[in-house]
Image (cartoon, rainbow, N blue to C red; front, top):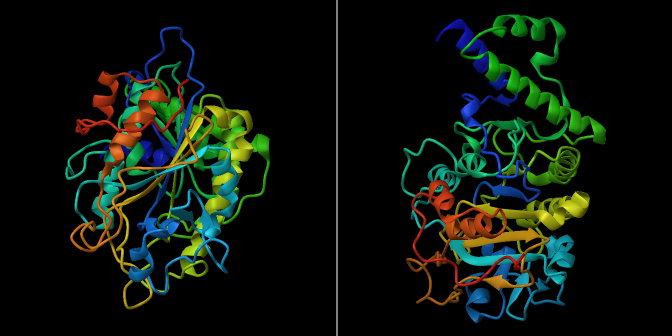
Length: 416
């Protein structure tokens, strides 16, 4: 590696993902105006237990499969929150109940990736590339989405909050990454006058990297400037990998402030860990509840702090796969298959649990142990990209190259 290439990679490691060239920017709309519609994706790494997030309380098999971790009926101590008389919401997610009642929150049950892998690494890779079973895909589907969106080019079109730039945003289009918590408001090495000046001189007039370097600096300053306008105190995130959701309410407030202060931010991604509940999962209280509580609070904060922007925003919560229908001998659940996706936003046709739900009887379980995947996660994302972000069929095929032929039988979004 040449010295200049090494230093450029160092700059990227300081928080910038630089574009490969001017041609990598998103295309401009015909009228030259950026779209006001936003998309936020929250990834729950570790495989959250969807059957206790949205529990099929009216199915007698649910209590039989989960004698110690199954949620109690609504109205009982630690009981679920009634959604529609059949499904119940985990009580730790009570902050989201107003959005459900306002019909701005929906769930898609028995959804996920059709790939049968129970490897966290592989399953997350497939969901972030949107090419299940194919490891050779070079970019993430949100990076491809950046390239398909209309509007004036901006280095802050796509933003991630996390310890590293995620797979879902990797690729030729530019993206920006901020660390979780207080670390996300600290200056990077390029903000130090001596080092910044040295980098400036190094790349001045360089035909290959000069423009990319300057675009990256501009992106960093734009996002940090929006963050400083809010001026809020940030919580410290957990070390290593995707952080636990404990600090998510603060990160959600910061993300909302960034999106309000910088109209160029259209896509955002946040990853949260701690969902691999093999033991001592708990029911209405316990380990899972302790993870869900800050997640629910953070999503409610995000919706509230976005203000009027929430009406033009769709938030998707997804996880790499679900967990076993039966609880295990350690009071937890193991790696499964089907799960539940969450969709929030002002344009969501909410107040419903969507999907081809078949129950949790022995004959309905995948391989006799898991929820099946009856709704492909890519079909959900494609409908959002089409109806919310207004992309056409040609663009959808580029973003989701192996999109299943069968479209959703339901509309997640109200007609606009």
